[in-house]
Amino acid sequence: MARHFLTVWDLTEEEIWAIIERAQMLKKALREGTLVKTLHGKVLGLLFMKPSTRTRVSFEAGMYYLGGNCIFMTSKETQLSRQEPLSDTARVLSRYIDALVVRTYSHQEVEELARYSSIPVINGLTDLHHPCQVLGDLLTVWERKGSFNFPIAWVGDGNNVCHSWIEAAARLGLTLRIAAPEGFEPNPNIIAKARSEKEGGHGSIELFRDPLEAVRDVQVINTDVWTSMGQEGEEAKRKEVFRPYQVNERLLSYAHPSAIVLHCLPAHRGEEITDDVIEGPQSAVFDQAENRMFVQMALLEWLIISGLP
Ligand code: CP
Ligand code: NVA
Figure 1 (spheres, rainbow, N blue to C red):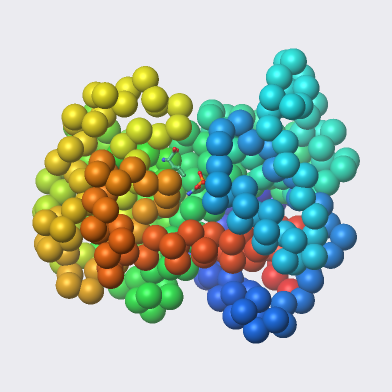
Figure 2 (figure 1 turned 180 degrees about the vertical axis):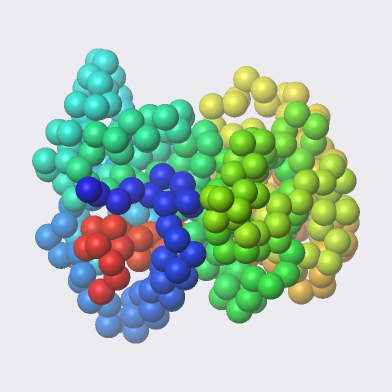
């Protein structure tokens, strides 16, 4: 049976560490011109129902660097737009390609594709999770800090990226402090599962209302847009509710002086983050975007050739 990567729970703690280590090796090898084409002859499909810059290009470029090829599809161009079932689509694509990255709205759609797929299905973002993003974020924190032994703050919407961070905190035993306004907290079921010993959660997930309290002395501040893809109808209300959660110089001054700032991008300057913070010396956002490619290259090797070379 194929292994899938739909949420962070699909990797063990050891596997996450193996991917972080392999990603660092791949980054060095690409820079030194010694990269081995471990996925030569393999084909990656990408099926996207939402826009993307980083996820699409980092998967495609990573696959090419490893010697493989890619086929990019939007749902509009496939027979999905004419109601062909996901179950049939998954079984047909499994006959042509070696792995499939899916970006869509409902998380149940990636689960459905994975259920019927005999090749690995990778979640390239759903309304509920964005696990590839968090692998890249973890590599960025590890590169900058060499440790996870400190509190990490999430400020803003309890959204898909936040959910994947909650699961990563549980898997790796991290302390995650989340500051979100009332009504925009992360999904309680995701928090409960992450806190449950039975599910292998050993991190600490702490919820705050006050963003200044949440970021006090933290080494990492992470944020994301206030209005995610698919929520455009709520934009005006969200702009109002989230205003106190902006990552600006004042908020940053409450964190540890060597704190780094993460944002998965795309960012809305002047909304969830100010221009001076995202362009400032504590911002790690472009390393973070770059690291997406290396963790995903390691993930592709892991899933397609069943383990890292
Ligand atoms: N961070 C991220 O997933 O970016 P894209 O929407 O551009 O893929
Ligand atoms: N939370 C954002 C992430 C974009 C990469 C969204 O879902 O739109």
